[in-house]
Image 1 (spheres, rainbow, N blue to C red):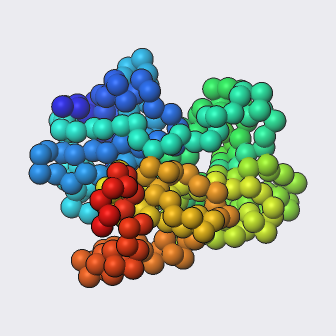
Image 2 (image 1 turned 90 degrees about the vertical axis):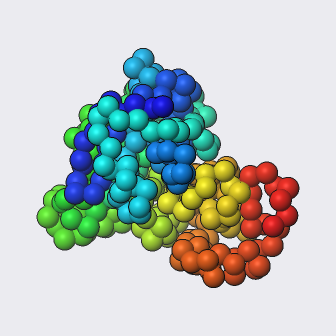
Length: 293
């Protein structure tokens, strides 16, 4: 059992929890995720690792209460426990593969949309711990959906923007990036965009136009977390990939976002899943690669 040591409501429907999971905390890296189950009959929910403390043996998760399982998770209090807390899963951020000297040569901008701020935070913190400065744009529809801003300000240069102008700049993350480049004279060697699919799609279109290499995290489309359900199958540069085992991070300029969004819609119904299984054949599943279904 994995005890909840801390619970905090970041907004009306966004929850932060610190969970005691020493083995996960001892080996995880920014960009990875965990799969959480409340009990034997519970749904397996992939959640991005927002933070970790190796000394305390804790993992911080942030989730939005959308489906039945996340709504159930939100009823748990400090002292309660999850039955399963499996990880770290997925590939770590490509930033973790670079030396400190290589990182210090890069000018990095993070574009975080809504709950996508949670997986951005450990990457910005990772850079800060290595003496690397970075910029982070946190965007949301309104002020109530801006999360982790104060924590982020301790590790990065933060720019807040809201669609309705209730906090920070008025506009979306793309508007803010354009402002930083045109008005403040900023230049960037790498952009990392994490948020809803539609937000990442348009962020990648803009950075391609600006000739800024871009990484996106495709964690919003994961369901099973092992590649075998087929939900997170995506096309990247014309090749079949599975977000949970090949990612979740990919080259944003190569991801077929329209295809990913179409699959996400179809996957919500049994009829849609049947259509996808028939259409995609043996490439529908990842993971074991041997089921042939």
